[in-house]
Length: 172
Image (cartoon, rainbow, N blue to C red; front, side):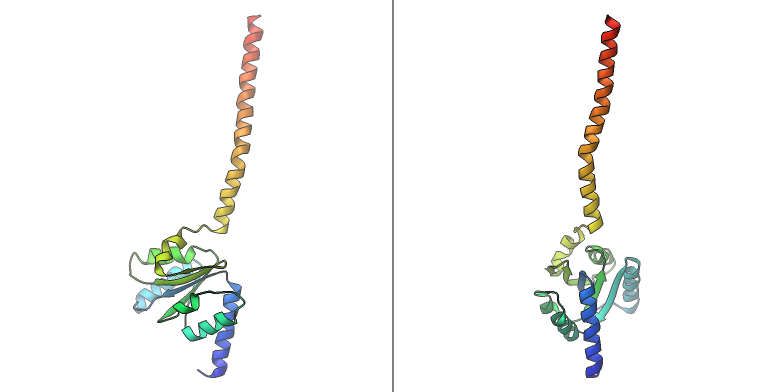
């Protein structure tokens, strides 16, 4: 690779790192061709972009990026694959499901909305992260429940009051 090609790759990686808020680093070494193809298909279905990168070029792109990646450049050893997604837990769920058939991919680290997770032991934590849409749905549900209680209380109270008035009027 010439210096120009390397500079172009670093520029492209820097742009991708800047444009995405969910970035996973995984190790897919040891997977044969058909298993790797299955992983790529699963990524496509889950709307996760997967690409294999050179560690030195990715480290330089992280350095050139406007984001703070903390200790993530230290995990760039061995084979590294980048996973980009719109949802914070999408790649983690994909990795966990794929591991039912294979022992790979291994999670090296993740960058999600400025939070940094390092190590394969963080996979369960990442799977349980809620997406923005799920959090908004939870908040809307919580906001609606008091209003529903008040409305149902008024409806049932009105029926009771009408029943009491009818009973009192019939007694007289």
